[in-house]
Image (tube, rainbow, N blue to C red; front, side, top):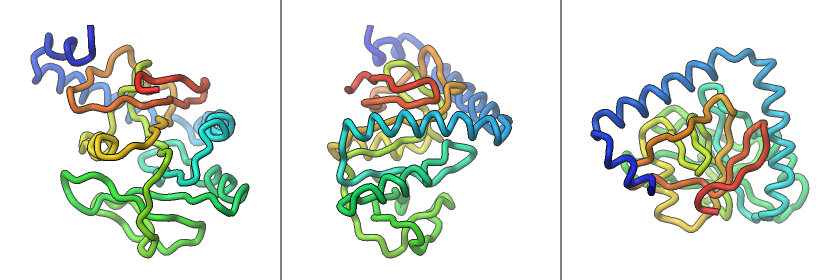
Length: 202
């Protein structure tokens, strides 16, 4: 049974309540996790990213500024950039509601400004199209479906461009089934402190 067939069995309102409950529970658990423990998990995630990104070998890599105790990839991205002068890093920005994300080139020390949700993005960075993007995971399942914050920005973005999506998050957000909707896009890969996993789109 496909994810879309499964969710159709549920009343849509019930599915939305269950998704909201999963999101709330995962965000609370992540926020309550001591910084020291998250740092250990992050170190393991960065080790796993080393091997996966070496395999994928992107020229342009997008990542997200850490938000609400998400895994912080900034130091890892700085090291990745330093490994090859031809590499480009980018950050997404939400400039319009209900529109795909845009990506702007980022370098350490770049001048930043908050987007409409208060998340920093490069003011003067040129617009780029990533080959691979690291997507934060609040809640996820083994197929690579995820719950973000409910705005749908990444789903719209992944539907609009050809890019390898790598979900990055902590195992405490793993669920058996996130009840994906018809418009949801599965991650190609998942990276957590436990390892690297193929998603449904890989």
